[in-house]
Length: 335
Image (tube, rainbow, N blue to C red; front, side, top):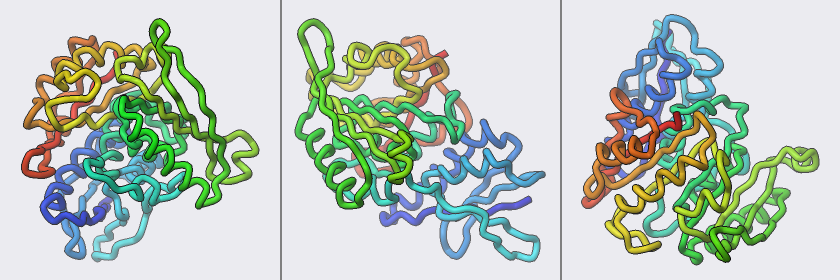
């Protein structure tokens, strides 16, 4: 059978030229777990970038659910021999609101569609990609919370840490306003988490649901924002707390926590983050390949006794963002 997946058009024409490569790599990573026999190739439909999917049998329910999660999906169609295109599925239903991750605008924000791609790459490298799995997601440098908002829209339990209190406050205020404006049932809790010695971290936790009925039944998701250093994750949250860690690393040379280079920060943080992962959990990192090379990131992942994903689609995520930024990703799995 033949399917055509029309891709979401990107407003930046230069970046749009990269979307086909990214979408193919993302889909190949996901299909390796749910449809290994499927053949994926580039195509064009209605002057829009598209992907052609060839299979011997109709796509399984798991494969269709994976496609619904694809970051750049606009719509999937069955393509008949006579050229007719029959709609199959659209994007996955957003748990809170489709616009949630994209409303808040600020300089340096990670594109929410790319954030979905990064999450998918990590998710399908691990053991927790089943659609019904209530994933526990962690972003160690969450800023104003784009990763948490993407995870919240999947009905997950999400945690983010950051050293910048102002960024966390802005993210907190935005989520509060969004939930109130859309009249979504929610609760807000504040607490102080114990770190090392006498150190503590301020924490705010939002608990919410997609419907009042589900909220009343206790069928909820959550987003938690914690003001602490990324290397305090083990002390703050304990061992095996998360299924997936996803983080878009700062693109410059310095990070605010200690003025250390991103490479030095990663060498300290990766062994800590590993301890917070459940067995079969994964870490997905994006970074500026002009200042930090993919091979070096994978080397540090291996030094932390994790298994880096290499070869094939895993080597095909590098893409242009702007003059000083060529973004790439690296993913590893807790063995």
